[in-house]
Length: 320
Image (tube, rainbow, N blue to C red; front, side):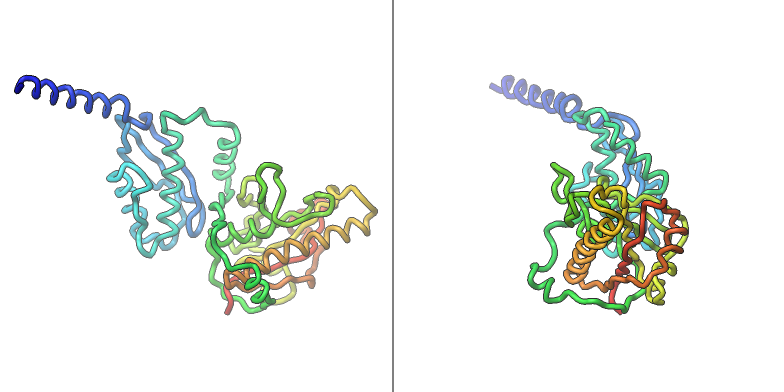
């Protein structure tokens, strides 16, 4: 009986070792990179896998100005937990912590033995990020006020703080404005004449001018300078941290003459503006739509072709 017990325990031990070493290794050895968006901009991480386990996590590139101890603590916690799900964020640096966790999760997907060969689109996305684009976090579609309360709170405000908006807020703002809400057919949160989808959203920030890419949900760099002072004659355009510039691509409007195209473009811009108003009402942000703009000067600085015209501008920020 004793011999049988010893044999049974030996078999269990060997099975445990075999499972651990052969079947339970989730990752392929090597170094893998991941990118996410933090409080200020992109956060890039590198994960080293050795013997099928996470042996090293490093933040190799970031521009966070108040990361606290997250740059050091989060990698250590990930290595200890051997995953990202069981890791708590660092108090006072939640956004940066989440960015590191998202980046490591992306890297681990590449290292996973179950993962497929990388497709072309994600590779292009990473390449674009390296060239200066900002990948936006996924919008939180579970938050916000009820619609009727948003309508009750909707208002115009010309008073702004200089405080920067986080990329979580910018992500939700742009998705609400005219993001894709039906992935199967690429249709958007705002309607457009004959589904022309002719309105592009440019985002003027202190760090530069970007164009919202609704398909990839990211910001593509356009100009490496602050042009907010050109987005309106009012002084508060230079104070508001985000100025949305709506640009109509008239070539996408196939019906009607020039006057009708301008009418459709103005109408479609109005739909987007109202979406922004409702999001701002939900999140307690200030916003106002501006028509008093030197459009020719702005279009020249933005280097827009003749078929693209600025319709309206909409600053957004925290209320004063």
